[in-house]
Image 1 (cartoon, helix red, strand yellow):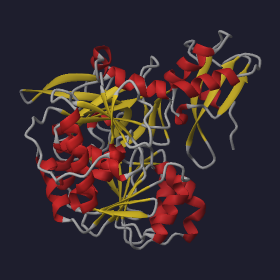
Image 2 (cartoon, rainbow, N blue to C red):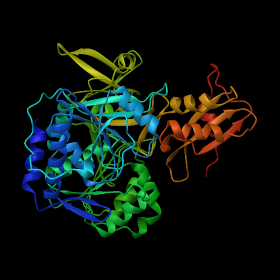
Image 3 (cartoon, rainbow, N blue to C red):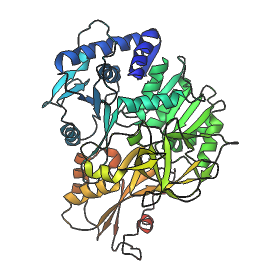
Length: 498
């Protein structure tokens, strides 16, 4: 696999460069090579060749990043789980993928029913970064997103999918990382955006700066920009809402690139943010987990490129080898200027949801184009293609929302809230915008008020913290639309979180 071979060459070729800065400690590419080789040797010794899906506990340390590369050199996939997510949910992920082996850099592992490779306790071995021969249709990673039935939804991404992403980014003349770049990595390794924030710096021999698990993210980023003079930022737009009070103090001439994704970028704050970065190119990327992180982008510029719809910056055009198609409910292409659901095709498209044929039938379809059958993924995002060929984001087609960059099914929150409630009442999860412009979660309950402590304690054992509603409102009678559906828009007005 081309990009895995390139990773080997980059790690070998930049031995004395810094690869990672974790909690103010720097590690070189040589340190990285040593860790990768130790973990790889342990994988070879402990794991049968046919076992391709290996669990990975995503701690913020050198060993965890080294584990990803060690697995890839062996042609195996990582199945990441966040140590702060409830154990039951993580075990569910391992059960769904039939994962028997877990790489864990924790002092002691809680995965007692699995064969654990304790990556911090391995003995040194010869450096070995030469990739094995393996097929590109093998899985490189599986990420689990929120699912409607209370079961997480697995998205497998193959080595060919990742290669498609690498090809597309490398074909982009406006974006070229260099070994002297200092790159922000603010994402959990269970979140697909993390792939671009470790992979492209590693391919270029750049240094990656991570955020400690317990740090206040936006404040730590502010510190890194100021003290470490970062040159490459990849962020969810909500972060700059939190940074907004600090804008007058931020003047970061070292920043060359700033990429946004994982949520709507609003035009007013984009302009203010670009004033803080006088020498920076800003990219508004778009792409779902099912399409290997990025599918295209809009090159934002506060004077020349500020195209927006309802105050949300355009998502631009598809990248190399990617096709965009805007369709109606019958999957037929709609004319230019008409709202429809955005669908994606190309080499980055996932083979399909993990063991979920029902969902695959809903989310993927094939259509004939120029005598060829093209497979598309339905994103659930509403878009408009304009006369100039740019795509404009117009909202979600369903009740999936982005919270802190993570995609959340409101139906899953409702499912778990109702499961523990002794009262059989209507409960509706909503995304509500706070004064900073960020989405928060609210739970509306159709009832007189009652104690919800047991419900919330239960939800905390079932879901990650970003899925736990921060606001509860009791509503005697839910508002309904003419066709009898609960009027979610009106229900939001019951939540005053200003």
